[in-house]
Figure 1 (tube, rainbow, N blue to C red):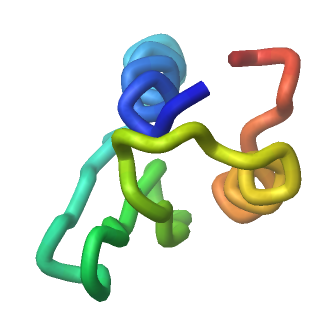
Figure 2: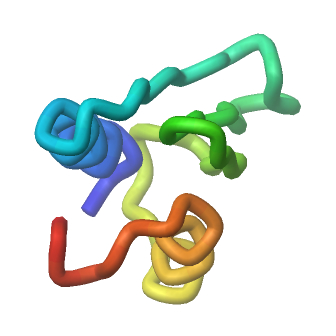
Length: 70
């Protein structure tokens, strides 16, 4: 799953749970972006590349989203 696909799925979950999903490109170094899910946030690497399994697991843990919800 790429970063763009992850954000699309996260926005769908946010609509169901009535949580704000925000992507802040200014708060990231280089090609990294900060993703907000409600009050929780994390930094994602380049959105056009495939997210590695460990990176995806850490992002989901930081945002409080379970893997099976994607």
